[in-house]
Image (cartoon, rainbow, N blue to C red; front, side):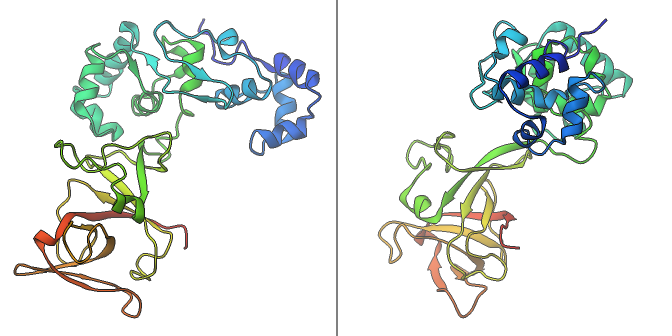
Length: 321
């Protein structure tokens, strides 16, 4: 019989520590993000199982050790229980897990890493090939969750530990439209002008050098694009892009006429080290950078050598709708 991922931390355990901490069911529900008192009551009475996605939060709230209740597999990375969040946690890539995945792939007529990649929208065939070949030690839980949904695998029967099951996203969310995402760094226009995250002389790509602990990020769909975000200041591109909006730019993209771009002016030019968001037009050897808001903002008439870099905008993330 398979062990469910919340068997060790069950309703009886929850009630014991909640009572010990003198926390009401109503208060605990609020700490969990708005869970109804009746649901917590049913968890404690064993009428409903505690959803795995809440286990780490509960352990954190009551200052309990994840390791004690769900021993971590050897070789896995640590868990930060102070915040209730996993830190780069992975699911061990065991031969038994790979066998289950490959068998399910064959049943679904998914015969290659390329086909699996297409089924889950991961955007990295090489990584999937190496995982399926056993050349990488672990799966990111979100990627494995997408595979579980695509292959209709029952989580309870997977050859992974209870702790690892806690790391998986809720089953079925990818079928309901959830997408795999990756964190994309977001820079203010001033920071971009100052060169934050920018490797200029060693051949690395633009904005490769950013610190995930100190740089703002937003989740973006995993695709075959290298994205970087810029927080726009000013209303020169309004109403298309408003002050405070974030635009995601494709670091490998090529600017085309009529499209919105973010550019940095080169040193030794009139606008040296200035970064702007404008609409791009190329006429012969001249580049026109224009504002959508004709009453607010400068337009620029420059040559290609006047620009240090040009990044076409791929997606707008607006918080001002």
